[in-house]
Image (cartoon, rainbow, N blue to C red; front, top):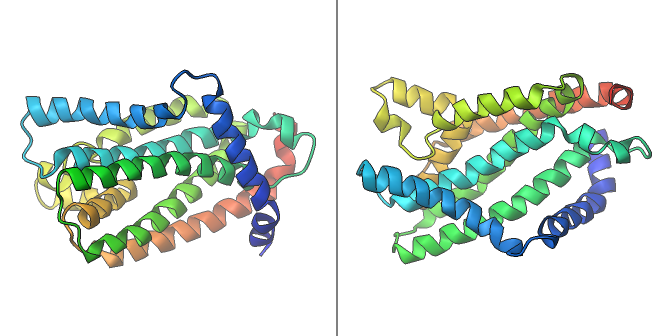
Length: 259
């Protein structure tokens, strides 16, 4: 209940701070907000060139396949990386006034969510250009994204806490994320690339890989994703989030002393 009260109380602050961060990010840039389109698009073109042209992949609608993976992965990885140093980067705020630490995380997630929204707009354009037959199963993108957001929030909470005590954690996390990137199926189909049943198990055991797989099923293949697995990862995300919120509430008075 404390969490919901504080989110309601500080929601306007989170939104205002997110808008300020977005404005500051493009203030001194020649291309301004166009970078939010150019960065994921250039990454997609590189992977399409290497794996679609050079290695001749047979994946259907491969540019869209890759762009969906990049869009979701960028959001997840940036949430994790920014959460590690979140307290230290905002010490000028938390050392002067009280603010729930997960509000700072929500603010950062709002910034990244706005950028991801632009990328989903590009996906919509690509679906139209490639004449992908979109059906009613597109509606499953809503529960997919809800579970995805909750999972990113839950994982980031723990890195917010441990990032205060372990100064080199960001370097370690960068290495782990680099390995995880290649095991998540951003530019290839995990189930097709590994012999059964290993491909099936790897795809379901990795929550980011599975949620990206579900997004692709809804958008590209007009298929129903596994509702059971979506429910399982939703429950796991809620439990992780509850544990992370309690961990931060219990230790937040020590954060200022540590930084």
